[in-house]
Length: 253
Image 1: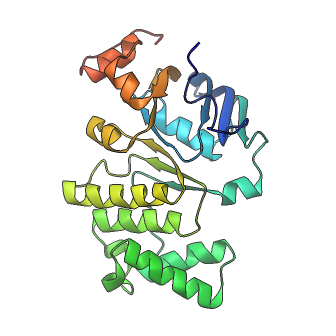
Image 2 (image 1 turned 90 degrees about the vertical axis):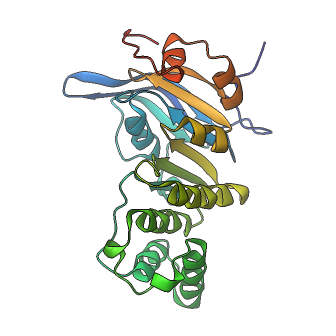
């Protein structure tokens, strides 16, 4: 029997992050429905699907920004606590910049993780270099371009050295050059051991960056597995329709 590559971490009995029968209701509707999955350590998992499939909602549930209506989210097999929150970071589609300089945005993130003094100054400088924003260190973060703000958001998320980084369509409104710089930042973090979970609509980006994929349809997991295998031979009708650019309206995957 083939083993689902999203079921277990390599060499580990317990996955980094897992859900069991996860559900989320809002406005009298079930928006996430019975989602059971697990995320493998040091892998890049792409979450894909049509608009309204529940991708961003699922990301927020995984990160603990929303409480599930039913089901559980586990971190290393346990209920997430403060340590889990500190070991995770998230980058949103529209970056939220603090009303302070680029440099101060980074220092604030470090201070929130208890980094002080010389270490904070050194790590801030390193993050500025990583994000290619050293020349704008003292500029107000809110005057940066969209691509620059997103680079700062990624650097700010990574400055605390998280084990897991969530990204919600971080390049959806960026030009190709800015998109490449964001992808470079994320891939560099992955090369250093950060596990990546990323929502994207961009099939080319998924092919460039993904190891595994989770396809959602109507709040349910329609298909999951190694990205190359799923894209080559999708089995769910909704996945096939999405990949072919067709509208799929059936209630179930």
